Image 1 (cartoon, helix red, strand yellow):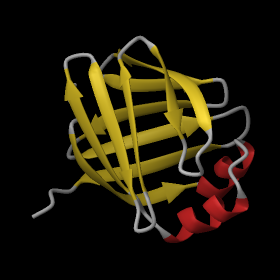
Image 2 (tube, one colour):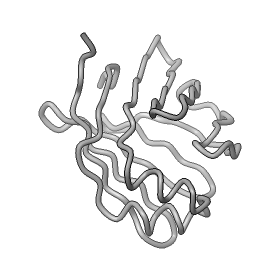
Image 3 (cartoon, helix red, strand yellow):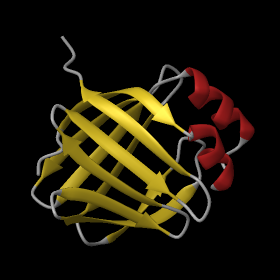
Image 4 (tube, helix red, strand yellow):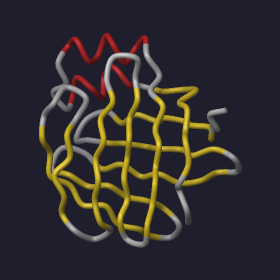
Length: 129
């Protein structure tokens, strides 16, 4: 499954509780309540680049399918994670969370869970003009 594209978040469920569970600073929790980032996913073979754009910052993370990578969160924390593909899904695993992305119709749905609450984020593909 090709997840490449520019994706705009249009709905989120349980985001605040999830962010607090994984230790996000309160500033990030408040910012994410107000701001819906744009996510750009680019893929070249096994290499994937995730770019998260907000009005205040842009974070770029790269990884290769099946290999552990270090990624940077919006608040600058470094996390180690592994991205893999399974049954048409893109799964990211770290010691704090597991994120499962899948294409449903024209949307990408991402469900991220931790030991506590999980968050569901719906994204629609958005093409910049």
